[in-house]
Length: 298
Image (cartoon, rainbow, N blue to C red):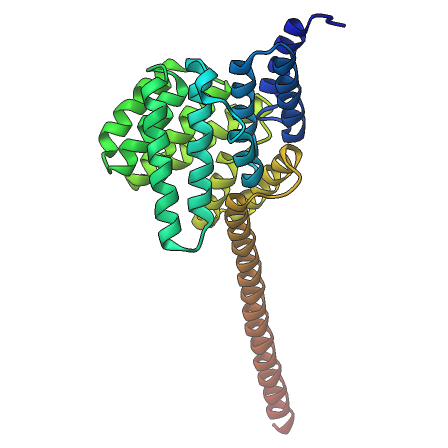
């Protein structure tokens, strides 16, 4: 019903952010609509920003070619501070993904170097104390193995976010990573659980924490619960995106393998116990026959 392009753009942007963690194809649709409306208003700054947001959304769903295509169309000189943050973050993410999935070591290092370059660029323009600033600083401290400093920064982040929000889920997930580096398994599971619950309460379908928690539980032998969590996380992620992404496959496969091993172990145990019972029954039967014949001879 909104007639003005400015009003439609504001609504389209709100819809993009609502769909961004919920359903990928809808998020991409509204990102495209934002680009079209910004173009019609001759707002090169907004066009570039929404192309950057679209590129990031493509990158996180394994559409790296599409992500690079969008980023190469951005007029960087037209971007304001917010646009530059989104632009640099999109480049940082796609180069990290390209480095992660290549099998060539020299190419991997080049991509990671470019990722680090764009991380530095983000830090130059991002607002200190924002969620993305905390995320980047946590990445840097963990990479430098400064885990106590990372934990201290995480304490600040956890206090800053509002509980039971997508932002608190984000902060809890990165806190679990610090505890993983500190080899504190119990706290890793706690904060992954906290992150997963917050995202579930917010109807976030792009689940990661619950899947990683399921893998941890499977390693602990709590296979039944791990299988239930993994199946739920898989259903959520397929709502967000129509196929399992690369980083999601390994945890899910590990949970399934642990479940199969547990089932096989249980079947083997039942078979062993059954064999022992049958053997004892046979021995008892033989002894009974022997005693009966002995008594009959007397």
